[in-house]
Amino acid sequence: MRHSETFLNGLVTSLATFFTVNEGWQDESHGITAAAAQTLRGGILEAKAGVSAARAACLTAKEPRNAAFQAMRKRLSGLVGELKQRIGPDDPRWVDFGLNMSGSRSTPEVPGNLTAVSYGPGQILATCDESPRATRYRFYTQISLEQPEPVFAGHSPLPSLVITDLEPDQLYQVFVSAANEGGESPFSEPVEAIPQALAKAAQGFVYRLFVAIQERPEWVALFSF
Image (cartoon, rainbow, N blue to C red; front, side, top):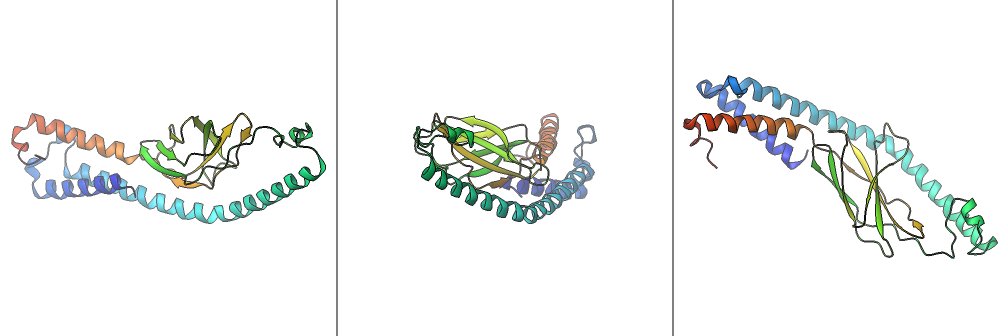
């Protein structure tokens, strides 16, 4: 669970306890009640359990995928090595094999140290190291149990990108490649991240709380920060 969700879980738990002990401080007109806090906390715990189960399932499911990926990479490497022995670097048949001509401008190296973190509801921030000769970076996402291959998410001239329009609370694998006029590098090894979702609901609860504070001056001292 992300730090923000841990904080929000602690916050709504504390509020539920406080309003249970101090019923007179509740404000039903704004939905600021012990019951509302308990409901929100239950949703956080349920979603956390679901995410943990999905993560475990993805880790199990990706083992054969990773093995197949490495086998394919080895075979393609062998193919490139054999082609270099049989055709010249500027032979157009490189393109027939879906490859770049080895005599053309060298493609960038695979970017290293890819990281991905939740950046907000439905968003992931992906960053990586710069790659020599790269003029742009292409980012991809994949839901392991639903999508057969990575899906292009966007590109950037810088080695970072905020990926948007993702499903909240869904475990994503994130990949990056480096590209230039000569072509595109292979994908990096994937990293995982889960876009936030419950933060938005909890923030709404906290927002309503502060609206109520503004309308009830006696609350100001209690919730002063």
